[in-house]
Length: 245
Image (cartoon, rainbow, N blue to C red; front, top):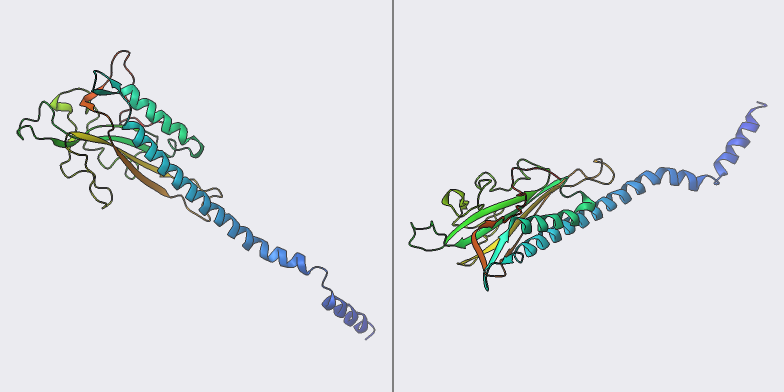
């Protein structure tokens, strides 16, 4: 009985004490607030990465539609060194997100022209992917071009039928989208970028996602579509059998 009164008094004081309420509330709410904040940051970063890759794809297709060297007054030749330069530009643009380490870029030349060996159709234009060039370390389904298996590595490297590329009369159709085709007698540069995201806070909030973007531009100048040239000193071709960041 002698201890009952002090215990009751202590319990009363403890029940009335509010000095630690804020600390307890913070301890209980901090994990929830932190998780929500991290999740919002992950979503914002994912949106920025999507925008950046979209812009890189557009810039690469635009640059590829412009580059080359004039071989005469009106005809422009596309060279391997030109392709390497614009792929290098895309690599630099994506350095901050490790684009070529965690992804794959494919540049395709979709052409709708008449080549010297197109005799079976009475000289009418034939639509085909004449050549492809690539950069990036990722490989396999979801990263390589959907047309990689159909376009030989040496396609477009000379003006022979053996290296003509891959006939594609219906144009390029990506994931059920509308077909993309250049006008007759012209071509377009088609870019595919596939990239595996790297979450900021690990995989517990947002798992890695594969981002897929495409872009295309019609070739600006009157290009020589006979082949992709490689004059001396020859540049190393960025063919799609190579995988490097």
